[in-house]
Image (spheres, one colour):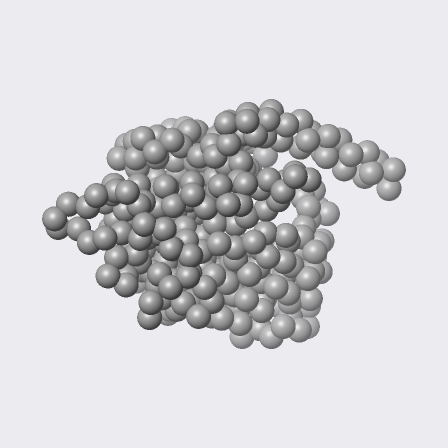
Length: 382
């Protein structure tokens, strides 16, 4: 398949004798399998870089642009860019969630990717490109590569669970056998999941779309209890259709008798599984359904060939101590399963407009505060 038959831009970068000509291109839907295969094979690949995720984000006003650098009809590095207009004049922002994916690419390939994005930005009137790759903090090579190509630490980047994607996560090594995984859990966690089994809690992992509404109702209950906002139900229908329907997601429901106690939504790609959404009822919390449902998710992920189970966002830690008291419970819960704390390099911006980027960095925090005040005011009136 000709990967450069669409938009194609050839860099002025001169490859060494060992390298082939590198070309920047935009891929399309009929190249879906080639794209997703490249993303899935990367140890830092993520569902948020798949074409399915681009379609989900289209639902909320983003336009997906899957761009790649190719050589000899093979993808060498890639970035699913999400584009969104932010000014009446048509200016937009580019966002690359959990990307770019560099594969085995060397500096030359990254150079072509960045220069291609700059050229694309001129066409789309982009203000900036924001990236937040799943690269562990302290990776000086990647940080240096980003800065050499004009990236800077995002001024609005947060140090912890918040931000565009969680900077701090918990990960569990699933390559161990189940007996070892159980043995390495904290005693209280192991006790709780076994208590749920003894009390007759059942985990359903062959859910249908009818179960999605049940999960969403519990999610609303959880949001009211823990005071966070939830996306609309049609958004979750889009998750179901694009991810669960494509084998990139799975819904789990915990029941006791005829009563639904908890639910979770997992993403899966390659050898990684992510715990993305969780919800629990206010009823029968003493039956510990949240512990058993996590264990069943881990077992399912192992059966799918996963070696990493990502619990996603937690509070930042220093010397094993959570810095955010509000999120400390998440750290304790996830650590109880034997997960280890991982911190990423965080968000970086590539300014693409000398005029608009400074205005964006000043105006976005102000607009965000105004929206928060407006939301709080509406809540008080309700």
